[in-house]
Amino acid sequence: MPIIFKIAFRNIKAHRSKSLIIGVLLAMGAMVLVLGTAFINATQEGVRSTFSDVYTGDIFISGISSDGPVSLFGVTSTSGMATTPIIPEYDKVISIVKSTPHLEKTSSLATGFSQVIRENGDQETEEDSQKKIKPQDRFLFLFGIDAASYWDLFETVEIVAGEKLKPGQSGIMINESQFHKFSDWFEKPLSIGDPLLIQGFSTIGFRLRELPIVGIFRLKEQGTAPEQLAYIDIESLRVMSGMTVGANEPIQLKPEQTSMLSIEDPDELFSDDIIVTSETSKHFDVASISRELSRPSEIDPLKPDEGAWQFIVGKADSSQNIDRIISSLNKAFEKEEIQAIAGNWQVAAGPYGQSVDIVRIIFAVAIVILSIVAIIIIMNTFVISVIERTSEIGTMRAIGAGKGFVRTMFAAEALALALVSASIGAGLGLLIIEILKSLRIEATNPFFLVLFGGQYLRPIATAGNVIFAIILMIVVGFIAHLYPVSLALKIQPVRAMQEE
Image (cartoon, rainbow, N blue to C red; front, top):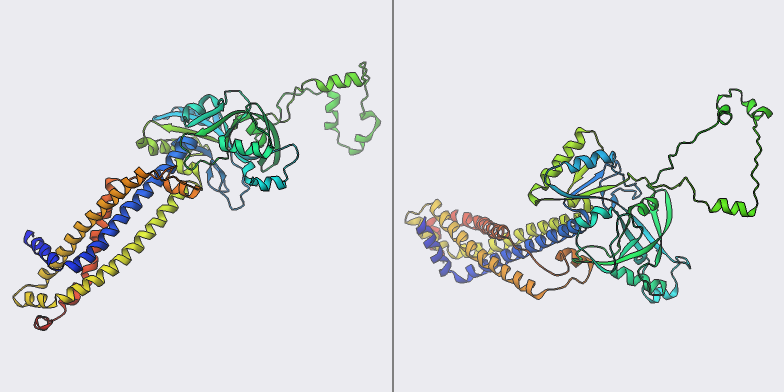
């Protein structure tokens, strides 16, 4: 075998021009593969860390909807109007979560969509158009959080002004860039403590809530985080999202008030005997009526359901335990017959997390196309090279070299050339990656934020990616040489020796 490779390298050197063309193609293929997989790694890691560190944690738990998959952004359904389910039997679910090994931190939350309303209405004025304030700039993606545990779980929020929401505090935290847009839209500088009139959207209609600005924040790593993200107290979100229940205070009725329930003849409902009159000694005038109206109501018709949570998010003690935790939780939910499901960050991210899969699919298709094109070009080059060596092949056949030896010799040439060229190409790819990192190229729009996996271009190359690129190019080179060699071996040795 060593003698075969020695002959192979001698032949590569003897046919420099053709070998150079094939080598350049293989090197370029390996370089593109290393760069491409580095971009995919950056995209996947960037999106994963963005969602895991800012939104979802490692573990995501939600209720189950018959309309489609559930994510932090709601239910992915064809109608787009499906209600995000709350977690059923929350106390039992949270007990299971707390007892699951390797799950270090957890927090509960709910999400919703809203827009900011101003006093003079929500119509876009000519001044708004001149200031280029778009209608979507007034929308907010609300996170109703449990402030007692949420900030311990997600530490990427950096306060610019004000403070973080505290347990039991009512208010809203908005992104720094959104804060400036609101100030322009209101035509006055906003500050901490100023109220914002928020209109929440839900499947049961619109609800308004006036909330003070308690904090202005930015994210330490913006990544793919939308600037419309805002944090509010969970009670306000429950009211605006329709997660409310009627008051459940017991009401005592007198016998005369329930006597109509036992009437069988409908005509008796309109008889004089059924009408109960009573006198009151209390005299009402304007002052007394005002006093009664000013008294706080004992029954709140929009009392939030304090047990209503849409999601539970958590972080594992190690990334290696994430799948094990998810499997354990789902088995526990199934055993207890609880309509809840656990997933990873990509499930929580929903359509946004699928961007990684889209990029991966596009790149996989590009690899297939690149491989096919490379095989065709290299094959044509091999055909020319083999035709030029027809007499050489005929001479070897004439002096006793079998077809197997000839095939092995050309295979060794193809493998040696592919190995050397692909290694050089992979090395160039690694060099380009380091140069791109040092340049700190900044993302200028949301598409590049996703593609870069963060604010700056930081491709991530791994040993596995490099080995994959080299092996794939070796396979391409090997496949490309098979057809021309098979053609050459079909020529009779005597005729082959006569070829110039």
